[in-house]
Structures are given as C-alpha cells and as structure tokens.
Length: 93
Image 1 (cartoon, rainbow, N blue to C red):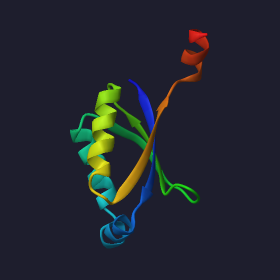
Image 2: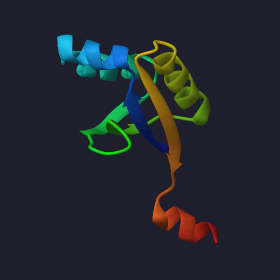
Image 3: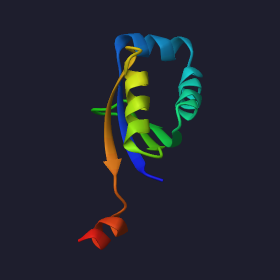
C-alpha cells in the first residue's frame, strides 16, 4: 500500500485543543482510519514541524481527502509527501 509522510504544525487553536484534551490525537487517528487511511507511526518532534506521521492509503485521492478534511478544521496545517521505497525507486531506473 502506498505510504505518505504527513508533516504537521499545530495552529494556536490546535495547541489549545491538545492541551485541553491530549487524547484528541488518538481520536484524529481513528478519524483518519474512517477516511480510508491508516496512521502507521507518529512522533511529536522539535523543530520546524510539531508532528511527523507515517500514513498508508490506497491511493493519492484518499490521501488528498484525508489531508483536506484534517486541514479544514483549522487546528493543524499539513505538508504531505509521497514516500517511495528505495528498492522500488532503484527498480524503476
């Protein structure tokens, strides 16, 4: 299944939401599942991004729907990257 990397930054509203309800992170991951994708791994990071998420989705359209739905809430902004396994890349050369 295709893998995507979602880099996320909380907005001020998102920071307040997480501060008031840290379990909201897991709730959003469940919502991602309902949209047809799966959060395979997730880290809180220091630096340019607040979260790094590894997400599997059946196709780009599903991933775009996930990104649009989550972004529309105004609590997080995302940068989504398609991840290509190195062996697949080498085989395509």
